[in-house]
Length: 159
Image 1 (cartoon, rainbow, N blue to C red):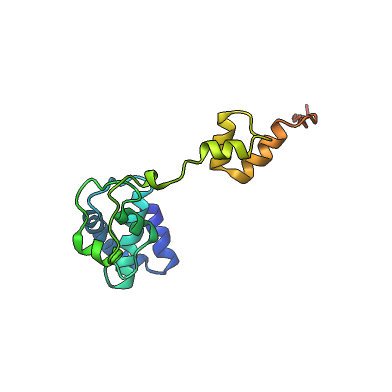
Image 2: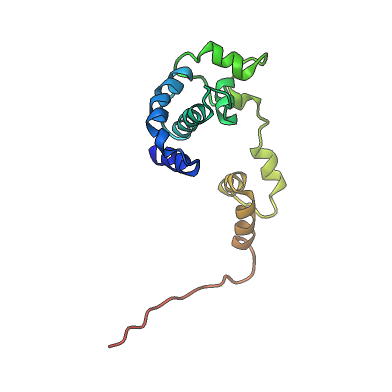
């Protein structure tokens, strides 16, 4: 998180504001209901703190990820999110009261049927769901009837 903050501030030619940003981090974390500072939350909190300082106004600009978190798309916050911040960020929109994942259409079986031509196992389907472009090429090659290219490497040393 710290190296990311330093990099962001250097890009903005605002490294001199590092101490101010570091002071803002716990305030943002408190506003967000004390999320644990692990990825991705650490980056979200740190970047939002930097934006607050660089804009000269708290939450003048709100990251879309912070808005999604406040809405409940990352799950329930461990503590209470600042009510004024919720109103500022969401307006009339209400935070989720159900799991965000419950709103998603199940994709596994549908995708399994769509890619059965080149995916043979559940692991293949999962790979495709995570990395569609790379997985399709990999799986088509994996299951093709063509002989696989083999690369042999060696080192020659002079004696």
